[in-house]
Length: 243
Image (cartoon, rainbow, N blue to C red; front, side, top):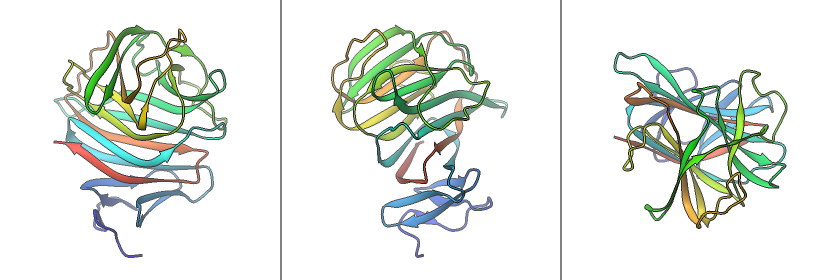
């Protein structure tokens, strides 16, 4: 298959490839291939499709996917690993995007086992402009939807719920509002998110969430992985990093 623009076949790792200027490597029993839509991440054993994006030295990243709507049979896990000034790797955040049975729609789940945070600051943006900022949001313990087999040491809890599809993942180390490690999720069109207390936000196209009371030593991102558990495949349309 001919490589599409932005994809090169000279990455260093086994099965890895360059896509949008970022080295991308398959996880578990997955393979990467170029299509007209972007980088196809496909499971070869029918269990999960996964990719690791190597971002050494980046302070921010975005990955646009063909929009996905969470369902009861699958979930997306995003894992953020940073680099401390001495080169040591640091697990910064683990997030699940999955269907919530309690909310009957998609939800963002955070994992307190990573750093022990009990509350988060949640921010929403429209067209890059801050639309709301809410402090002290306490996630509700709840197992994300999807296949059985979550790691026993994880402590997932639902942070916010949202209707419809999501379209990209986002993350910064140093953001405009004093953020440290702050993951986020983009939506194809603005929509409100629902907090654990059942209140709704203004309609936004990006929501970010920052753990409160956590002092990370990482000064840059090293790696972000996306694992589609219960997914045969998903497509990365584009990846961008800062710087």
